[in-house]
Length: 301
Image (cartoon, rainbow, N blue to C red; front, side):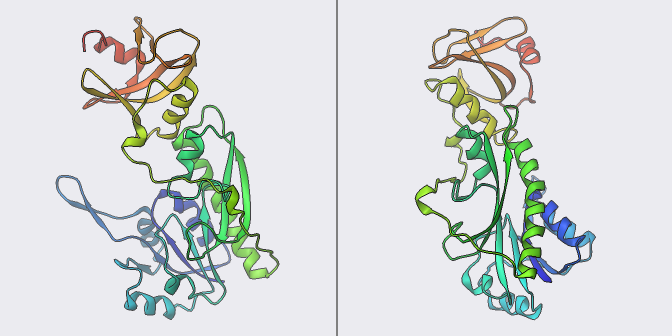
């Protein structure tokens, strides 16, 4: 099978690598344009581009997906399948090009958590199970008929970083299995039930602001869903403090009330409290609560 792979971030690499090492052929890779980052405006490549360059794969980096030259170049590869993993929303002019089909890998059990941040929202909402879905592309985002799904447990200690990596690997298995299914022709597409759909919108700065009037479990899940990045945060004496790891505590404190000992730090919530395990003061490094307390006293900030 001749495949064009489309993706950008680290999440896409296990899928790309698994296809590259399979019996199928990656005819070309499509990724986002290079970006200038940092003070020196140094040009950085996407992880998918770095992989493609190492493996000498034909590479396309369109600025506009509807650009006619890009579309003609895609046609020239005469691909059987387009595989999309963490890329932009494809217009019909693009996803209808393959001789067989275009499909996407999504990091949730669709129709739950349709949108840009399914991993984060599954954690924020306190889910105990999630997974990945491969589905046929349609014009409306994340609504296409499903090829297959793979489930995994969300552990209590999971955060965005650990669950991201787990689903990235699980997704690679789903991608290769889906390509094999399409090649065999032995598959049955399952329509999504839109009545069961839940949103997973883009994470904004406002998403991460902690409201201590919420209960401890909800705040704990918010912190898990945004750790290690971008981080949930609150303000104390006008200073932003990010929290990356917590435990729920039975200690009785008022919402937002801070209690610190020589080694431990607690903040009250509407119901129960949180023991803070890892945090970061604005402009400083991330550190354990014990190390943080050695240099900072909340009553003096």
